[in-house]
Image 1 (tube, rainbow, N blue to C red):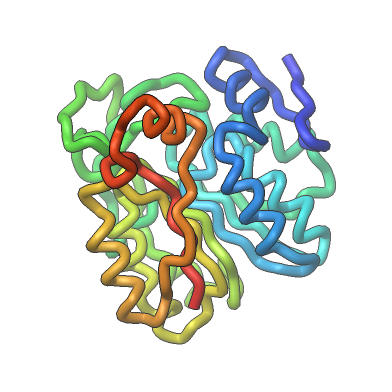
Image 2 (image 1 turned 90 degrees about the vertical axis):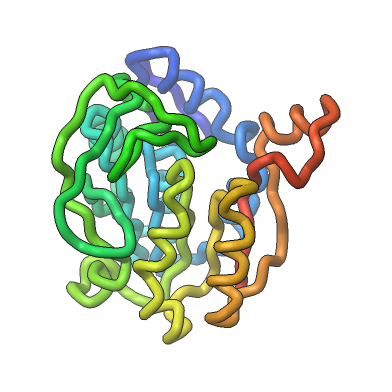
Length: 243
């Protein structure tokens, strides 16, 4: 099945992928707005946790043929769908990396929470989900892990760039692996998924490099939880950071 959303075409072969396509503009309204406000023709953009390409493909349309999007997705089945979606949306300029990002380089176990493409929750290093609970992995592989600083040093990712980081709790480690480019102010803007147990770490770390939390963006699920009585401070959100 092919679904077109906002000029982007998605190939969907399971209910997870179909839902991602159909909720592109409603699941994370703040992310869509941030991309449109941030990206201009010729810009560079890093999407960490690209999944099937929902935001990477929209970003590619915004930066145009003179821009460049790097999409990082370690889940193999999901990465295959990402590649297919890129082919369905020419002439998108997207470089795909089927690696994991962290604070160091090497090989590490990658634990699959689900084998289904489009799924989330798989983890590098240990089978512990974003809420701190251990899960039973359906599969495991040794995945190459690198850092954003290395990607820039090896000219895989040019600078300056903006980035979205959404990796189910691994955000602090990925940020630690980009300390070099943060220190040099080669990152224009950041959108980072933040959980209650990672919030202080992330805000303090980025603050040391001059990046300030400008906005808290709640997803559709987050807004529903707050409307149902949950305290905003215990609901994950996407944090917008500017230098």
